[in-house]
Length: 242
Image (cartoon, rainbow, N blue to C red):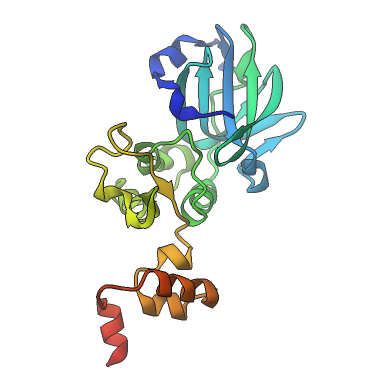
């Protein structure tokens, strides 16, 4: 089973294994592997067939020891030497292997696709399916370059993303508790890795009993309200009672 947490995060090792050519392509100076969730193909974020293209939010490794992460909100074409599937804790991942001298990125002139921010937000935020190679910090900064690569900005800065991520990232041992409560330095090894809940989840996304009982999926909301009852009334509940 692939476990990205056991790899050493070192961008310099990744940069050293790649070289941009005059035609705009990027080749491997040593064996390189790129990983994306198989579910990217199902959600329209990747196309894996005779030609491989994917949203440039992937994990990349060298020597099966060093890890780098791309968080570019754009599509990019790959030319792998071989394609495999590996099992990770959160599902199956495509493993694209590149031999020494192989073309990794066919081009670096990226085309703007203004619908990508929505597709990424739907997969990562709404559904809570954040790839395991991304840390809390990576996810918070995910849309920082959206304006440059898609022409669509997501807020004036990443404060909006910080707020959303602070809601969906939870403590592993208790999904009812926010990860920010224990993360003095988000993503550091001094605290356990976070869990992620879907922003659309009635059970975990709603913060009060009224929202859980009046939203969609009543049985799920009712169960959540019984197991995790509200400790206080929120302003919206008090307003509705008037």
